[in-house]
Length: 334
Image (cartoon, rainbow, N blue to C red; front, side, top):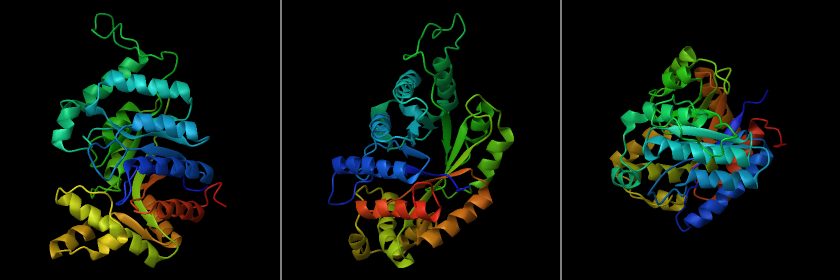
């Protein structure tokens, strides 16, 4: 059986382009992923970043689900401390009512932005994450006891259930919580230097079966840049080197082209940063990338791989996902 592959989309904005174009590009990629046999298409939540157009994943989920046929569509994720739990429950009950059986609710605890922008959203209290998550789940199923202030609160639409919930993690902090609640678990190896195997093991050890998840299910997020040859992939990957250098400096710009990145005057310190984050990427031809991804899956025991690709050119990003689908033998990629 082919390894299930999915897509994590941040709606990247390349230099010389616009956020509106990035959103249109995301829809085109979603349609392609649907045809190629990818399992899921998740949209991230980031705020105030000139390189990312995905600030409202709940809106993009509806548009993407309406534009596709088979692929599951969800959030990767909703950053719960930015939102009132009731509002998230209402949004995802509505999405489930509109697209039954095709919606996922991925939930994270990070702000997805800088502190000032986060404070403009709402007071950010990551330490209340478990409490907020419990409130969301209890509101959804109408489980507050008589006498509780929220006992009479009804989530509308009330005739559907909350979609399957996935807790997102990058350090292992959410792994045991996900296991104890019987949710899915997704580890963000695409940007985290923390080893993925220990939190995945902790999730499986603490897993309690639930109606949505009778068995544990782990999605491993990976960063991939795939092209016909290793050399071409390396050329495309030069963009992401500069992205990380700028982010570490607190500089926020659209994604540079490979030409811009290669002309950039890197310092030795910049080169060290770029090399550090390049180590999180799988870059190369289809055969090269497949071997690297399969080795990581063998190491971690992940059930599914979710791919994000920071590539400046839209056509090159589409082609990267086509090549991956062919390399892993996805149904529809032949």
